[in-house]
Length: 440
Picture: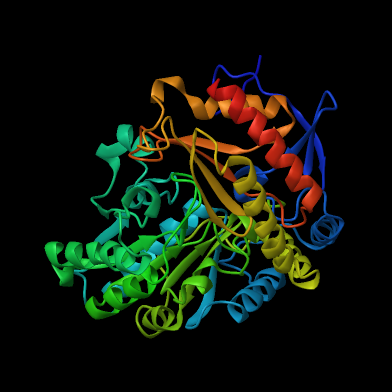
């Protein structure tokens, strides 16, 4: 009997015993290809010697010191590296322990920015339906995952949502990508005007929607128009790259491919590659200056912020990615993964869409391709696919509620950056067999 409150109380899970490269091993010696990186976390795979060496060295030196007393070298060096590679205008980093904490901090930064600059009436947050920004209350309120929000709604701050940029579901017949992107972005301007432009604080969005919808990228031009709208009305743009960022899509930051820079950006997951829990907010110079020239501090904090062990691990992960030019492999293997998925599922009776960027790909399941009708949620197709995949030695990230929080199933793939073509071929083959078994 376990004394852990597991995610699924009645589930019986294998016990993981180790990992090497793209594989994890359970206590019985069975190997699994980690084709989802956990939840898009393990960008370097498992047991990377350079990262474990960095952790040993840092543990020998210093494990922890509270940030009210000391700065520490790993955090300072990591911040320098992240700012050097950040989008234009980013000047500082704020280190926390994960993605939800990062989003919470970003929301507070946005609020304090307007308080510091004499505009306390700006307090409203706009997000997108079918987004996910974390499970803490502020992050949950900003997100649009209705299944996760439902029972906690009475505890959530009041937020507002528009439709996502989701071409498979919302682009009209005969409508060009450009026209659709402009129409989708117009929803933000309409919502700002509806709420009152002088009351809106921030717009929060994932450049590539991850866990809720399954690797949904915006169409070209959408985020450039979003940036223009935010600038016109003085609204801060918060980009959530917790899942899609830090190289996952083939560039260090996903928003590079959209040609925009945010006011605030949240990162985590691939930042530390799972070797330590870490997340961060990257903030622009104008937000930092508002704090520095105003109260002189950010009214927030966590016990483990700037944790030396976490920062040392993340620094090692990022140094390996740069040294080994792994983003080039993400692009090359991402193209191979996209091609193999198209070959295997392009004419599959129950695959409606294959999408994503780099090594961040999603497959949307439908009962009927012609109508895009989803499977009945009562079938719990995503759970069946996960079970069938694990039985074949494959770890993927299936989820339900793709369409409206209840209906629609997808499978998310986010393998380690070190994966090769042979492993990708095995992933696609096993995934195909798992889907076929699940829908049979």
